[in-house]
Length: 468
Image 1 (tube, rainbow, N blue to C red):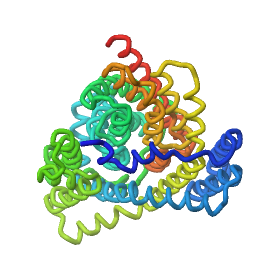
Image 2 (cartoon, rainbow, N blue to C red):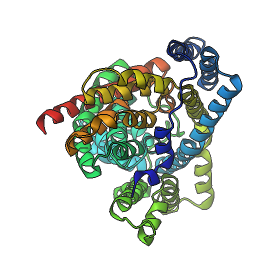
Image 3 (cartoon, one colour):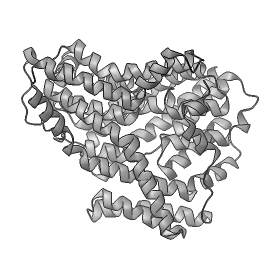
Image 4 (tube, rainbow, N blue to C red):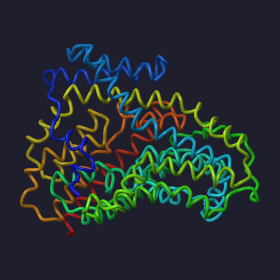
């Protein structure tokens, strides 16, 4: 199945990049001033990030000389798209996470992990869990679903939330950047004509050592820099562990957690292996494997396995579901505003401008692909946009390359697309809010972890290019 049919909006983006609305110096100035303003408003003035992101988006438009009505339209469009795409998934994920926590399922997972892993082994275990969950799952869904487990592991092991959280985030992020069936890598494969199977295999070879470096190893450093206790996002900070007799079994817990993962992975496999779009099996998996439907099914099953299955009556189950939503209201607004700010930058054309500058440089294709993705990622805050835009700009450069070389170029783009997540990335605010960090702490932990992931990923891609 052609990728254009799987992700038409993303391919359209690659073919219709926004033209810069102002000279290069003006756009760069607008971007830098807006980012600096965000940091000052949030860190110094202590303004809520939601309001700061709105003011930051308006600042970009004012300095770039855009019509403010156009800027507002861009911000509103990005806000709405993020809410429709990510917001619904976060809400479903929060319901799932609350059920997991209140049923004792999270306790069951944590006791198993803590019981079988030593103190030094915990970050490695969490990195593995993050990578498995992140294989077919979008970063945002995986993060929300993992948070109760991350919180409880940190509490029970009495370690900094960062020390066990960063390895899990590294596993999630690496899968998002390097491994199909995530939209960015899949679309890049189609744009440059890479082989999906080869790219998948090489992506896993790159992802594993990259997760080790950016996860357990970097997490140990970040955990010493930033000591934070788990926030009470799910209202369970003072809750006693659920008695073992009332918990779902470990097998049931893991099976319920992995159900959305399996459904999404099954969809991807069906799309790859079944060419006939009218095939009934493929059509079924195309529906149940969509992230929204897969997570909705996961929530409904969790209401049985984590709800009625452990003795909750209908009132208790309803109360648990209702209590899961208010704590994430602020998170949803901030993440959506981050999407609006990102869209203002995208529509200004600053990403296109930086891509054109980098494309004119005389460097190796692997390094150029990485630099292009890095620049667009820094400017727009979107890993997917960075991947697709960079890939579309190097199509002519990969002609004549071997199958392996083209796949390595795709992975170099993927590595660049996760470089230094900062205030224009909705994911930055998701981590910031769920981990209860300041902007400075988020940069010192999450942003630098993404940078380590990006640079080490490029290093392993370069190493493979020498060996293969």
